[in-house]
Image 1 (spheres, one colour):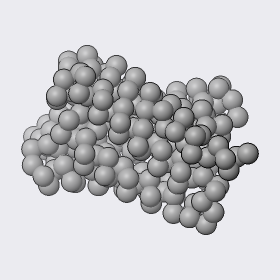
Image 2: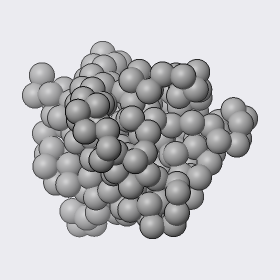
Image 3: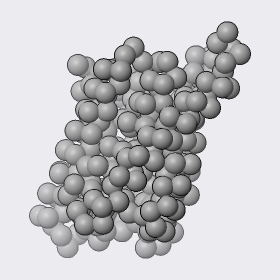
Length: 226
């Protein structure tokens, strides 16, 4: 249960700080707002990696959890499902908190109510963007946390956080960048409208990306595992 609660807290922090930055900075209006939001998401991951990494591994993302499970690093499908459940709960709580804050001081929030994702270039474009970016991101996670990396494991949190910044810089203008179903579910429930209509893209594409990353990683490490 401690692992699951750690994932809930970690996903709450990631969603609240990342989406909170997107709302406060009106992400997408200019270059500064895009960079600021990207950095916020990346730093949130770094902070949580060194806070709860020793408890749960700090997945805070169902796509990462799926990738870890398919690569053989989780004990059971039940544990995988419970990780995902608590990640979604954490994201929903974060979005609810952010929504309340915005409603009590709407004049201070210049972005959307919750920082929800949207397929700005259409559904197909959004799906491809999320699939590719999630694959790359989860591949970094699997590689950075691999035992074959030896001492560099100590810097896994930093590598993952920095890669998430890069991922956001590429994807924000296309989809707002999710690469994380939980981070999308929470805000979309409160945003409604197009965000809720496009939500399936931000669930299916990242999970497919996580599975693809696991397949690629297993191919890359097949010889070492033998």
